[in-house]
Image (cartoon, rainbow, N blue to C red; front, side, top):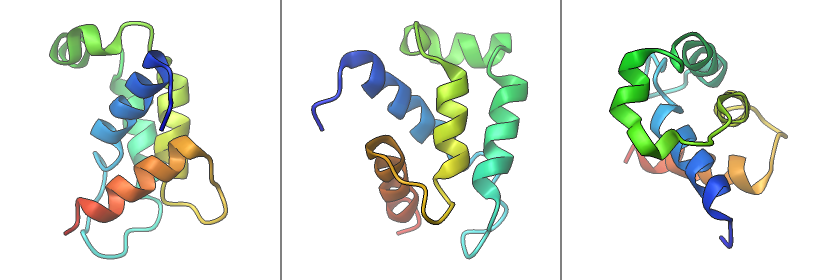
Length: 93
């Protein structure tokens, strides 16, 4: 999608966490917001930082959380969100 490396890393990290608080593989409105809240509470943890390592260098977790929060909302669209919405649909199949 022609993204610079940092943007691509940001979207990649959003893809990793976009469903971390999902309860059901069916309709689960609000799972994006719940996942974003989990991410905000845990992104600075040693476990998350160690697991992701260099992948998260320079990544703005506030931006990641905003992408994650918006990916299951109607009418909120950007290229970054569209990529995660596609991942959200594909990972259920």
